[in-house]
Length: 198
Picture 1 (tube, rainbow, N blue to C red):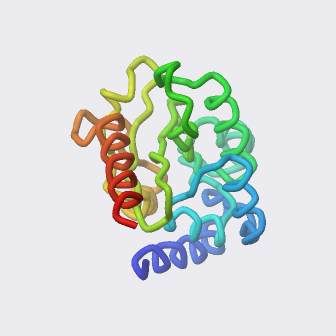
Picture 2: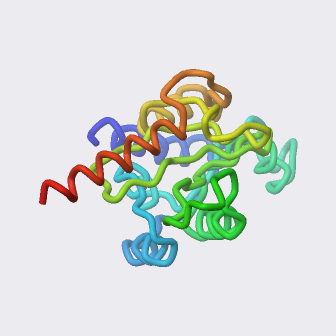
């Protein structure tokens, strides 16, 4: 997690030096993060918990604000990392619809939305029973199903580093394995094996 903390410190410096581009919220409290997980019934990847403990969501704008665009326009046209309230709202919407999963699946809804892209698509984590598993980052492209949602990044740490280096740009479409459905099945299988081993 040292690499993640170094990237977060670099964002802190950029907020001071380039405030018209870097728009990140104050840190979420530990209780806000724990309440989100308890209410939704998932466990965030440890890396995203750490991010929220530095910044409760935010974005890097391609244009200076307010010189070229209003704040809301800039946000709409950026890749936005969601804060606790935004994750809760998006997750509750997707979970209520059982979006993109079998109607027979009555387990905890497995996809955690954490990023809105500038194309208005979601990036997601696959929920894991504990924070020891760092979920890959998947593109939840709305026209496809989880069997086709490719792996964009091996972890949030990789995404965040790319996000900073690219001044707010990230990879958004992938056809690389593992795919979200395959990854979810593996997570569930591993959890089942761990339960049996206890």
